[in-house]
Every structure is written in structure tokens, then in C-alpha cells.
Length: 178
Ligand code: ADP
Image 1 (tube, protein in one colour):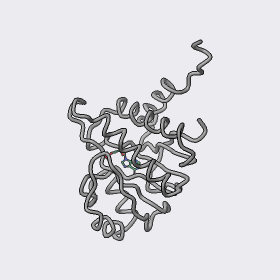
Image 2 (cartoon, helix red, strand yellow):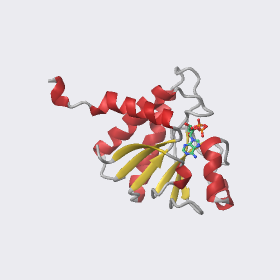
Image 3 (cartoon, protein in one colour):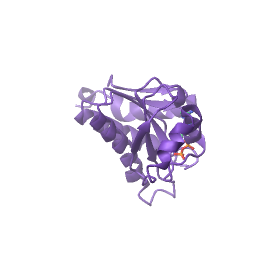
Image 4 (cartoon, protein in one colour):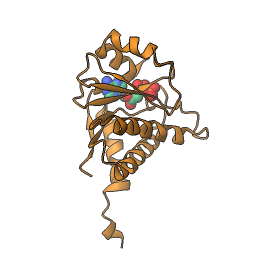
């Protein structure tokens, strides 16, 4: 799948047309990647976010990127992990799908995602990776846009989990199993 890759980096330095922010439902900034994106984008981002009236978990809203290299930011509040029996997987999948749907509607060609919900929201990384990769791969199989999607992991350890998960579910040649 040459339209998708897993990389290690700081998403605030991304050269993608749109980056995704693992936001909270207020959209008014927070810790982790949310704080980093707001710091890098400048106060204009918060000013635009204030006009949006928040966002429900699993949905997404688009703003400009201001001082970021990225032209757009897709803000999506991920689910807080509460043991797994509270619809967390469906909500997390919805975050990825909502961002990709908005991107395709806007004609956005390149999108970078952080690992949504796996920081302060404590979603276990292997489970989050399975949900994230399925949502992304299913979407790409059915849509021509975005042309390129990357998972930008903040640490090599996180990237390792995403790579292992990708290899487990997607790298196998179908003919090998026939
Ligand atoms: P959430 O509240 O959705 O859990 P966090 O920001 O706490 O969001 O964490 C989400 C993921 O983003 C974590 O895996 C964290 O390591 C990662 N992260 C934090 N800062 C950055 C950054 N600058 N670039 C990419 N990923 C980041």
C-alpha cells in the first residue's frame, strides 16, 4: 500500500496539506499533541477554534493551519479509554473516518495523523493501532482522496507497535494463504 506509511516525528513539523489534532471536545486546546499544535500554529488557531462551538467525540472539524506548514488542521476528539466496553473502538474508528471524509470532501491530498487517544486518554496502543489502521486502510480502499496518509508516531516504540500491527493485518500476501 504505497499511499500509507508509518513514520516517527513531530507532527507540528509535518509537510502534509492537513494534520490531525487529537483534540478534546471543547476544541480550546489541551496537553500533548493538542498543546504542541496550538503553540506551533499561534493564537489565531485558538481564535478560530472558539468560533466552532466544540466538537463531539468521534467527529471532526477543520480549521486553517496558520503558522504551521500544514494548510489545514483537522480537529477530532478521541474517546477516553474506560476499559473498552463503552464504545471506544467505534468512536476511535469514527475519528479517523471523519477526518478522512472531511479531507476527501475538501480535495485535500495529503494527511498526517497522530496516534489519537493513546496519550492522556490512555487507549492501549496495540488496540488503538488495530482500530486506526483498519479505519485508514478501509477508507483508502474505497476512496481516491487523500492520495497519501501517514501515521506520525512521536516515538520509535509507538511506531514499532503500528508497524507490527500493520504487518500482522496487511502485509501478508493473500496467495500465501491459499
Ligand atoms: P489524547 O488525549 O488523544 O490521548 P495526546 O496528545 O495525549 O492525545 O496523545 C496522543 C498521541 O500523540 C500520543 O501517542 C503522544 O505520544 C503523541 N504526541 C504528542 N506530541 C506529539 C507530536 N508533537 N507529534 C506527534 N505525536 C505527538
